[in-house]
Image 1 (spheres, rainbow, N blue to C red):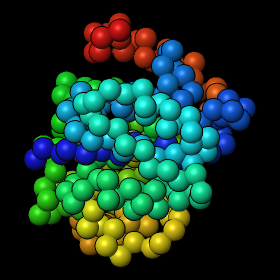
Image 2 (image 1 turned 45 degrees about the vertical axis):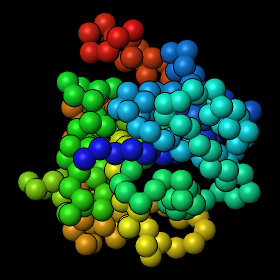
Image 3 (image 1 turned 135 degrees about the vertical axis):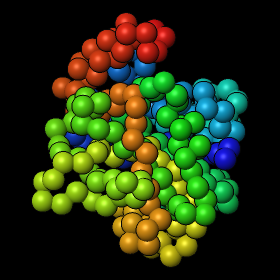
Length: 244
C-alpha cells in the first residue's frame, strides 16, 4: 500500500525540555545543528508522502513559520491549535479533514528515528494490512534505543498483535511513529484526549499491531539528552548507516 499523507505532532509544551522551550517550541530545539522536527520531516519526504500536516499550540507561530520554509513535495499544511491544547488524539482528530480517508503516518517530533537496512516508513507501509489493522505502531527493542530509561511499552505476540507491558515486564518501546486509519476515530471523544484512548480500543478489538524497528531510535526528552543524541548520531554516521 502507498501511504500518501502524514502528520507530525508538534503541539506540546515541552515542559521537560525547559528552559530551552521557554521561548522556542520543543520541535525546533536543535540537535546536531538541526531542529528536531526536521528529522521526522525528512523521513516522510524521503518516503514520498504527498501531504504533511503539522500542528502547533505552544508558540504555534514558530511552527507555522517552519512549515512555510518547506518547498513541495510534500505539501506542508498547518493545523492551528493555538486556542486550546488538544493532546495527541485531539490534535489528530482535528486534522482529519486534511489527512483524507485512508491510513496515514503519524510521527512524534521529539525523537529521532535512524533507518536500518530498509527505511522504517517503507517497512510500515509494506506491513500495513487494511483488512486486519486500525493501527500499526513502530516499536524498538531496548538495545536499539538511546535516551530511554524505562522497560518498554508493548509486548508483541507471534502474530504481531500488541498488549501493554504490565508489572514491569520487559517489552519494546513505542517510538512515536505509526500508521493509523481514520475509522479508529469514529467514536473518539471531543476535545483533548490522548491517543492511548484509541490504542486501547484497537487493542481490545484485536486490530492493533506492531513492527519492530531494525535501526536506531533516539529519545530527546530533556536538555541533558541532547549531547548523547548528538554522539549517537555521529557514531551512526561513521558506521556508514546514514550519510553525514
